[in-house]
Image 1: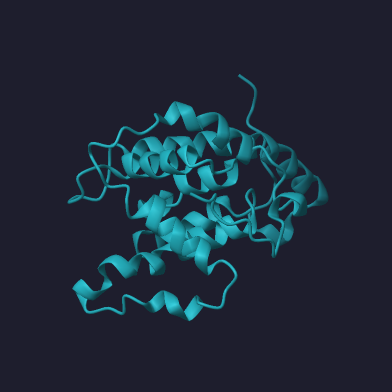
Image 2 (image 1 turned 90 degrees about the vertical axis):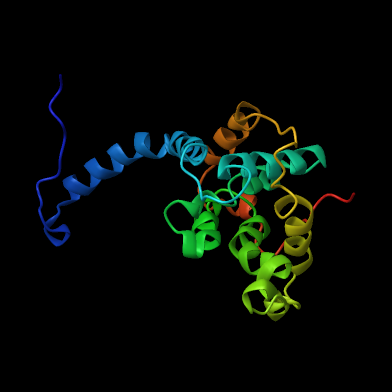
Length: 202
């Protein structure tokens, strides 16, 4: 077994050029496995999930993504929809923002924006039951992604808690997840800042 390669420093400020070149070299294979870690987290959501719902968080993601796929959404929308709640396990109070940061380097900016803000848009359906402002989303009414987020929630998110819905298996989406996370991070040609594609028309 080869000896594990490590830096010499115990404080980052003491690191040498050689130390940081080593880290850069070792980071590449680690980054290449990001999709595997994302898929592992999705599978975990099929085993450990918020109680009370009639389906698991994995099932919810698969349902949501299946609806997107079947409506003709492109790969960014499908993967963004599949992963829109992936933050639930580690960041349940701000899962929408957590989930958005997972996908942000690899998908169009409008998809990341929708995932980041879907939590407040979803309050339209239940906020009044807790005495909250169900129309809190209106603070974004002039944002170019407002309609996309409203449609995402209506068509793909809030509708996807049905134990009788026949969703695609995770295997259907795995190649898409791998393709997206294999992209160059923050590639302007992918991010397309300021461009709003919207959901596919019904």
